[in-house]
Image (cartoon, helix red, strand yellow):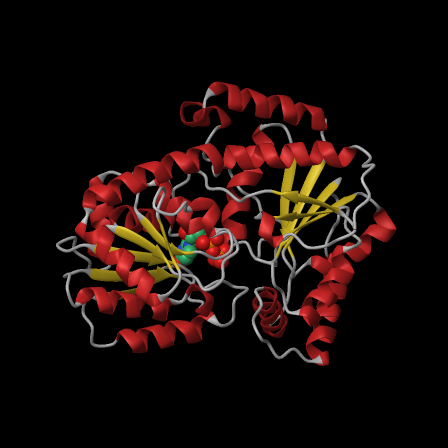
Length: 415
Ligand code: UDP
């Protein structure tokens, strides 16, 4: 199986000028020049599915256009390995997971295999999330700059799992977290970098109404009544059952329909089971549409987000929640739970509505469905908030500044 991604860039860096302004793009070019031909190697655990793959797919080619030699590899693991790392993922989010000594041993064994199989050619290595965290063992042999990029809400992790992972993290040169509240006490430098969306990708670019309609037709949907949409992997932490409950409460007084659309990720073995649970729960309700979307169907996701009257993201835990910026960029009113990086994107009642429970979500839904003017204003504000903070150009700038900072000795003592 191929380890390294070969991705073609579809957008040119200058195409972003009309969106973010010429000076921002010039600044990126200047910062990239400072790096002087360094290779930036990203390593994560999947080329498809989930936010990390989504970001890398668009960011790697743009770095290359700026003259930074960025590349992307994945670690390999069997199903058991990804079951263990999914438990780690849930445990970092604070979940109560049963993780055995054999699980930890399997993690170490697969890490060892990857250490032997992967090529480590980067001058700067960015290791994403827990699955490949153990690759840091290579640093003793080859040196270079190593950064652990944590995309998960690590503010309240399970102590045992965090202690295990921390053993690896402390050997990195730096760690990146997505929100200030995720930062941990570590003896290494920490950077705050929020994720981002690509406004020119198939997922986010403008679509004509014919394209949107054809996607609706493909899935047997009509826009004859307000459409509430949640796009997410089928994962319990995205609380699809909670969305259905909130929808059913609202449906008693407002005629509307619900679309829960998502796929599965190769590094998420639980998704099939969750999809079944959701299908069962929705059985018999013709206004609930559960759509299984194949990987790479970005135009379809885009069309569903654009067709939405209100977008929901009722996650119980969330890293950043790219789907929120995606919806806000389309000027959609969004209702989302106040977890993880969501409050960075949703300023309550300004760029969307935050909720804390099923009842809260239902209340917000009723409010937005019955007051379209207010809903539209939230969407408009949300779009500007994303333009200022969560576009890929901001993200690239943050990375470039971090690379430059890493090249400098730090005289700060970290605790
Ligand atoms: N996504 C997708 N297809 C799906 C479900 C999700 O392309 O069937 C995308 C979604 O549009 C977003 C990313 O996957 O770009 C999910 O990122 P997010 O940060 O919201 O959640 P994660 O899956 O990383 O927990």
